[in-house]
Amino acid sequence: MSCYHLSRLLFDLKMNESTYQKSLKDFESVMGEYELSNEEKDALRAGDPRKLRQLGVHGMLCLYIKRLNPQFRDNIYWAQK
Image 1 (cartoon, rainbow, N blue to C red):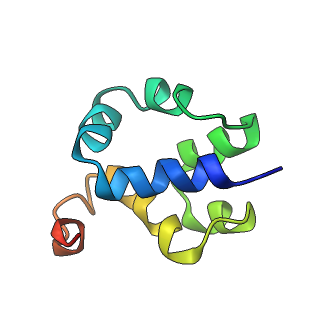
Image 2: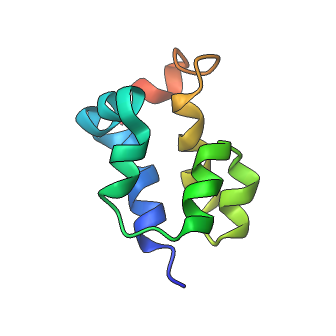
């Protein structure tokens, strides 16, 4: 199993504003745009960076899933590109 598409989705959450905005409205649809296994989709739905790391995603990319969590949405880190 390759984690390229999983890593790409997480990277796009940080760097692609349209992917981020679409994810806020319909994350299931966004996940459908990437070749993800059911295990990867479940890890994304859980929003737990540790689960994503266990699937082989780089530690920094794992954190980008937190951008979808309302508690972390306004963090200054997301504005940095």
